Structures are given as C-alpha cells and as structure tokens.
Image (cartoon, rainbow, N blue to C red; front, top):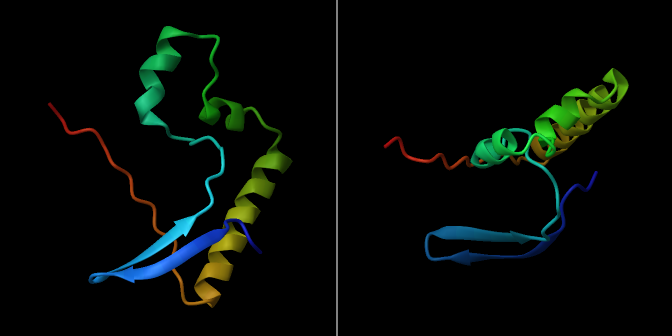
Amino acid sequence: MKLIELLEHYPYQEYYVAIFRWVEGGCLFDYWNFEKYDKNPDIISPAVRFKELPARQKLSAVEDIFSFLETAAANHYVAVDFLRRKPDL
C-alpha cells in the first residue's frame, strides 16, 4: 500500500527530515475554518460531507486507514499527527 510519496529524506543535526509530495485533501476536524462555515452555510465542511456518505463508503475509508496503519507498523514505523492548536487567549 502506498498512500504517500516520499520525495527525499536526510539527517539534519540531531533530527531526521522526510519530505513528502503534497496532496490536496480535507481535514475532518479543521478547527481553523469553523468560523468560515458558521458565516457561510453554503460551504459544507469536510466533516459534514464525510458524515453524509453512505455507510459502506465510510467503512471503506476506515479500512484504508487501518490498512495503512498495519503496513506502517509491520515496517516498524508509527503514524504521528501533530495538531497545532491556537493558544487560549
């Protein structure tokens, strides 16, 4: 399974850098756009669009995610998601 394309990778100081090809997509929890959706009801958020999919399509998406995670684990990798939240003011 190949969901992402690794373009280059190399060590940098005490870190390791991996650069992947950019792909357009939607984030199911794009908190930075909540205000945009509230102000314009004609714009449907990715989360709402996903919820409106037939159950079979949603299950297929989850199976793809699990398959990717299994492949990553089998190759001694771990999936990490860094979420940068806005600081509370």
